[in-house]
Image (cartoon, rainbow, N blue to C red):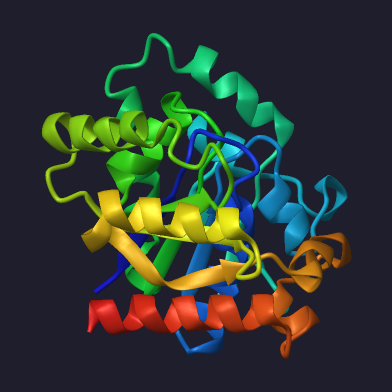
Length: 254
């Protein structure tokens, strides 16, 4: 059965795109067929997999406005079973263009319907906001992964985000569930990191992944080379973290 996972947090800089790219690559290395949809106008997941706007003519924006189907804009990556739907800065205009459309929150769900059976996992990298693009992702998804940075303001906004998930579940998507909160940028030598882990587990014990994603230089370097860390530096702690997360995701689905 296909699984559509929205990777979402309205805060920026929490490791959302890093998670989308590296979880996608790790699942693909585990012989799963994976489609990563870059739904962020910043297109960082697209560039993080080695593509720039000169490499493709059409992107997710053209699908949203009805010019293209998803199957016509899929890009192959260096990992055979990992495919990408690229993004573009033009996507920022979608909110305005959809304002008068009926069922505008379900556009992505309808687009995905044509390709979802071809993949084991479809990951959606959401923008750092709770606007119409993120709502589309939540309506299209089966489940949600929320990256949470191990820093002082980690809990800020989490309640609002989870309330949005509950509201989308009530209004549009009754099967939506929180797959897990993922603690990122963890430094085991840092007291603050340990405190954040304790606080998040205290408040959301049943919804926190066992895997901790470490703060890691190779993980930070990999996007500048247009590669996921699991192919850029397979032996690094960042790579081990996302390979562990992929195993946890697959095991939880078993």
